[in-house]
Length: 174
Ligand code: S3P
Image (spheres, rainbow, N blue to C red):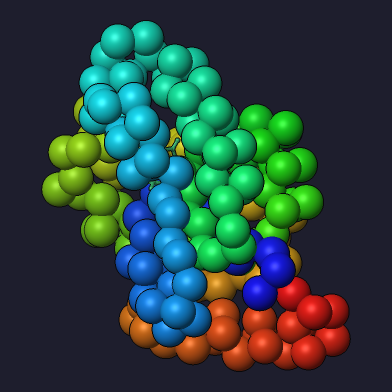
């Protein structure tokens, strides 16, 4: 493995769950940008939003992305909004093989309805998911592999990722 496998996608699509299992199966490291932001800043993401708004969090996110991309190749999972910054997209593309996860709006609302930890969902998951998903249409399109998690378990998704990754690795030495 000489490139990261980087998992992107909207909140609630299962990135972290899938990333953790994937890293276990591939016996490699797993880093999550949200977890790293909280570890390095020593603050919860909701606290960073309260402190300086979304822009403040995005600065931390960008700094942490750069750091995790410099680590030895492994699985990297990312926050749903990391791709809003074009420079982040270009770093992600150049440092990894990119998997985008998605799910239907209905399923995302179901998964996120009781979530208290994501600042962007404050005020009601249903409306936010609908609006944000529309606003972000196309932002994950640069990925190398697209998988819909609406009706698949994380384990099934991991099998598909590994299958495709092995096919590609055979040809390009990833
Ligand atoms: C965000 C998604 C969150 C987290 C932050 C902002 C977004 O991560 O980074 O709350 O803008 O979509 P998850 O995608 O892991 O929920």
